[in-house]
Length: 111
Picture (cartoon, rainbow, N blue to C red):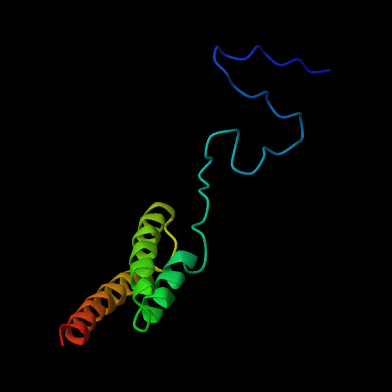
């Protein structure tokens, strides 16, 4: 049986048995591999745009769309997921529909 020399000082993994290959990515650490960014659009970004469009007919949807859009943009910044344009559009459409709703209410109730 072959004896291995003692490991150098420090916390290292044990050497592989003779005749075997090292695990993919090396021994511990990142090994050159990084996780892939999540695929698909952020679900909150899609919900933001949908709520903002609904806000054109109902004022509360615009507020929900703006909040969801801001939360989605923060998530997208952290995770690298797709959908930044959808979230931005949700915030813009929500703000525009909220402004139009306020103008409509003032015009309607001023008479």
